[in-house]
Image 1 (cartoon, rainbow, N blue to C red):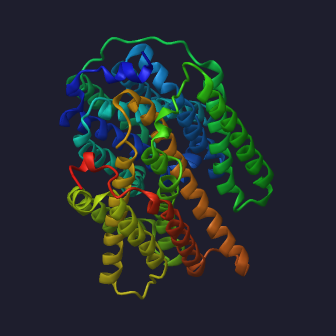
Image 2 (cartoon, rainbow, N blue to C red; image 1 turned 90 degrees about the vertical axis):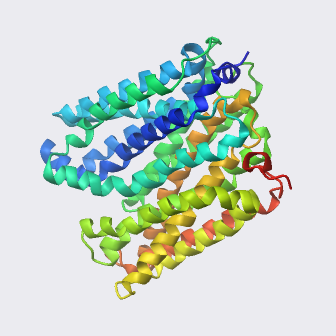
Length: 477
């Protein structure tokens, strides 16, 4: 029996609404923590007597530890049980958050953030496994919809919440708040997530784990370095070198995982066209474009429109509202039109609205600006839900644990690619006109560039069967 088969034998009640909402709440805690720190960096630097740029390892260290931990989640679940691993990861996240808040020196903060990142990577992947591992296909759309909202809302809410905490309390509470929230998460998990079935311990695929983890660390580190290199030219050789090393190692890992008897990550889910489309081709690039917008929009409002950080944060609220409104519409739309039409039509609207955002100006009527942001947030929400649900429509229960791992890695890569792409477009636009600082025109070029890339990312959906996922959305034709 494989690791994923062991996970599939878990009690059927794990797909209950309470269990899924618990996982969604933990996702929100995790993703909020990831987006809350950026607004506090100047105060953290001042407190520790360092320059703000010296804190970049607290961001990259967290990210790298997270993606390194993800490939290990399947083996850990098979050895100890998914629920036990999840509880241990939440506890570790909570304790490392406390260590971050108590840090008195930069090295202490970096070390605690690395541990926090590893715990977060496990929480993200194992939580998804717990939510979907035995759910009937008819429940996948609702489950995915509940799991998507944290990824949509946390990046919008994180900066203003972080700013408020830092301004009126202390930057340390951005971390310390995870302690009581972590205790709540532990309690809810123990109450609502059923206990594991019998664990089936398989040999550890050390070569696969080493190549996959190292390759992901190099690739993500290179992409993160690319964002820095966009403004610091001397970083390009290191950034490109890391990306190349990561690509080579992941190619070797892919070859190994296909051939070994007990891979650390099974590649079997990739045999399904729908899973491959959602996680390894069109889906990852569409998601990257959607992730680029929350990165560009606050910067554009501050540097292009001249708004304060607080005002820029307030202008993100309509975007947040659009995400909320669309949640009640997404499932009926998918059931009415099917995955292919929603991915193409809603996807085209989402990408075109990214370009429209780029043409907003301080002189644009306020009502029109708000309407555009609400609509952009709404179609973004629908596209995310469609992509994430499509990934699992043809994956068997026996492969869902590994599919969850691959999906988590794909989503992390999509987010990193989105930020990298946005930073490169901004840097390219600035270099083209030789300006000393970013202006409205630079952001307009970046938004339009993201739109064009996004439209191109939709083309593979044309090959998707019109009947794809009908069992999940309850359609018969």
